[in-house]
Image 1 (cartoon, rainbow, N blue to C red):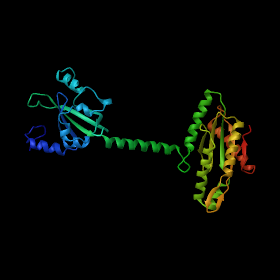
Image 2 (image 1 turned 45 degrees about the vertical axis):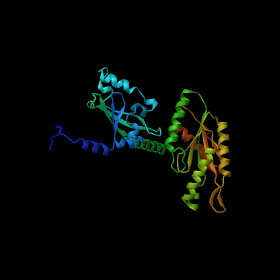
Image 3 (image 1 turned 180 degrees about the vertical axis):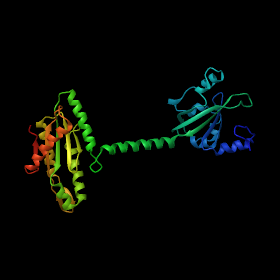
Image 4 (image 1 turned 135 degrees about the horizontal axis):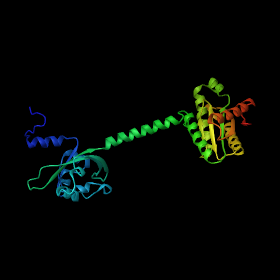
Amino acid sequence: MAEYGVIVSIDPILYEEILSKAMDAVWVIDEENNIVYLNPAAEVLTSYSYKELVGRSFSTLIPTSYSINHKEIIKKYINNEISDSKVLNKIREFYILSKDKVAIPIELKAFQLEHDSNGKHLFAAIMRDNRPRKQLEENQRMAMATLKKLAFIDELTMIPNRRSFYESFRKLLAGLHRHSRDAVIAVIDIDNFKEINDTYGHDVGDMVLKNVSNVFLENLREEDIVGRIGGEEFGFLLPETDEVGAQIVLERLRLSVKRYRFFVFENFYLNVTISAGYTKVNPKQSIEEIIKCADIALYQAKSSGRDAIEKFLD
């Protein structure tokens, strides 16, 4: 048995068999950048046959955006004008064109072979199809994006969750510190929501939450932010809005929910109302202090008989 590092003689037929069964594409080009050999894996990768590629310039397989003058680089290497580290023995990533002009991401490592029978320099390249790896990376990226989204989105209503709402509030407050502008925060609660759950079940309760959320989204401006901050409690950030404007927005939301028909089963619909409390955002206060003011106003709306809107009174 040959020891590691000892060169043994192998029949050329065995080399051919090994290359024919290799999973990676193997290419040999001459000093003129012409293809002189490719194995079956290279045919599979490019959809070209052996006869279609042998004798052609390897550069014809490189997309224009990645194309460089390979022939010139090879000449510079042969003339010792550039080191082999710039062209050989390093794994490089780029693209290769298939027969139907699809750019395939690959990684390649090139190295020099012995001269051919005519004394020409020969170079070989081992090329790996990077599509599986790229697809895996894309799947991982999408999974991370989904996880990140889920971390800030309420799974039931698909609107921002409490964490996301508070993060948006922090950004709004930081902006108000720099610029003197109006903003209002409101807290809205679905009236008698526990009775809905107890009477009709949690499935109906979930349906009400989802549909109320949709009503809110349909009646807010693009710059407004709504988030589910509790079981049946929603927070609202209304930038560039004074107290008069906030009253108009919240009244529109109240009436829209009240008029909405919440389907329970055939020929039976639920009537739902909401109560709201709001306050002007004071950038000198903390988030917790501001939300507490809105909560006090919400409590006043509940105490007054529900289906009402109250402003926090200093």
